[in-house]
Every structure is written in C-alpha cells, then in structure tokens.
Length: 158
Image (tube, rainbow, N blue to C red; front, side, top):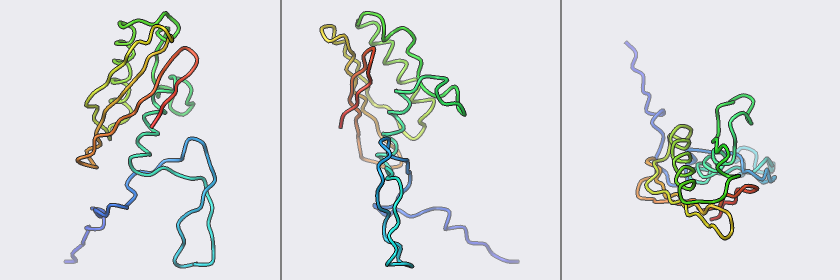
C-alpha cells in the first residue's frame, strides 16, 4: 500500500511567513517580492497587509461597516443604531463596547479580546476606544487598536 505524507499541510513556523494576508485599505500600488525564477521581471500589485496587520484591518472593517453595506455578506458589520446620534453618555459607551465585543467575536475568530474600554468624551461628543487583544496563532503578543467614534467619523490610530 502506498504511504502519503501530508506534512506540507502543517505549514512552517518561520517568523517571516505570511499566514494571513489582506489588501491595504488605502489600495496603494506596491511592488511584490522579486520572483527568483524571473529576476529581471518586476511585479507590481496592490499592497497587502500581512499577518497581524491583516487582522487589524479586519477589525477596523468590522467596526466601520454597517450591516447591509456588503452586498455579498449583508449581515457583516456592526449596528450601532442611534447610539452615535444621541448625546454621548457612559451608558451608551458601554452599549457601544458590548456591540464591538459581540461583533468582533462573531466576525473575527482569529483574535481574543482581553480588554476593551470605551470612554465617553462628553465635551467632544465622541467615544474613545481602546481594544487590547491577542492572536493565539502569534503567542506572547498583546496588541491594541485605539480610536474614536462620533456621529460623523470613525478614526483609528497606531
């Protein structure tokens, strides 16, 4: 009987290996790594984010997309309802935080949220958000996504 070796399906543990990849949100044209088979050919394509940056892009996409905006996936995204159009308060901030946690748990199974704070900035009429998370596939790395949400804008930093 023939023996089959499926070790190639396990992948490798090289630190520079691309495990996850996603298009950059600004759709900038970039250069690909050199093709060793054709060293004189220079390939260009839309730049992509890899591994942890791809996961960060996914989280931002989840938070900034409302259900119904993606035609092929109409349930994707978060529904903040009227929370962003009502006066800023701590209770509404807590509701926004719960919505974010539930949405990320639903649409981004690659991460585990370890901490989420939503601070109501009443004077600026916005909510400041800090999400601390880990990606089990990349152990020993605690990451964070910081931003603000108001009735007209979603801004994320770092």
